[in-house]
Image 1 (spheres, rainbow, N blue to C red):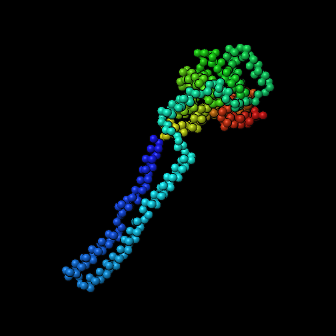
Image 2: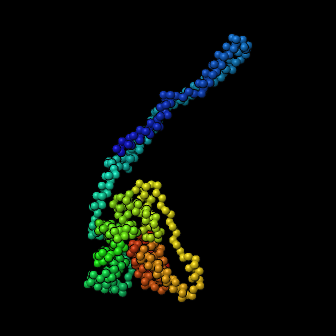
Image 3: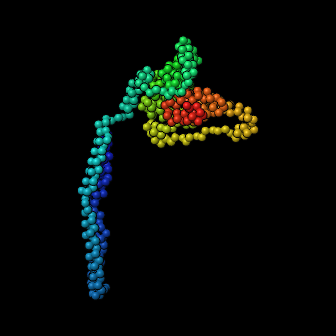
Length: 406
């Protein structure tokens, strides 16, 4: 079918280019000089008729014949030139040029194209995508293939001793949910992604029906990270467990769209991500990766006219809050700043945020004298943005400005 369409298009193009030359050969246009020549000959005959009727004198008739005869000669020379030009190269030159263009195009396609590629109708492509999706590696297989270590936060010897004690305590009592949560956090910060994944799954198992949508979404996220970015069948199950608990969970919806992309179904991923991008907020951690590829995704999904919404500015403190801060005592102002830092930390912990906001939190914590906690937040941010080098650099730069980096 592909070659039939190409041949038909080539025939249409060739005929369109050669049509003017064919018309020139079969129906040559009459030059203007030919019309002038007929007019002048008619004028000569009219002079003869006027002389016969006695309308003009013989001397006037001779003078008119000379003038008209001179015009006849000029028109005849112009007609011969026009006829010589109209004959031109005919179909030879354009035919050779077209043959050269077609030949060069065919040679280029044979070299850089895929002439042996079979037809790929939509049903066959969907079937192939489903087959690739079904052949995904399992979680353990993907983890074994992922040789890249996770980002490791700098941890002091004293902190490592505490973490070792935590590991021992959790090993003795694997049903301790709080211990498993702490283990998940610290193993993630240390780059031990498989251990972090095991702790996350244990948390969800212990919670059972009480596990929230965010618990399942967080488990899916660490599973994907441990698998090197691949959404395994086990991680996919956690994503849809989260959506069953809360179909509006944004993190789970983002991962569901990513899973459709990995499955080769941009047509299913695009509407999910387009809605997420429209909902915002702009500082949500999934907005930046969505915005980076949404236009290409729309094209592959058959929506070439899609236009991504413009980024919305993030809200800042209102004028009343700024004015109230000017009238506060230093103690009251410090208390207000601490409250704002706590609000930012709570929002980032529950809803996520941009790397700039994580960097702001790290820097703010050091300014209010909570450097140890800032280091913990830095470790958490490093684990969160481990797969995005640009975002990780922003977080590390903020820690450097805050004096936390070694």
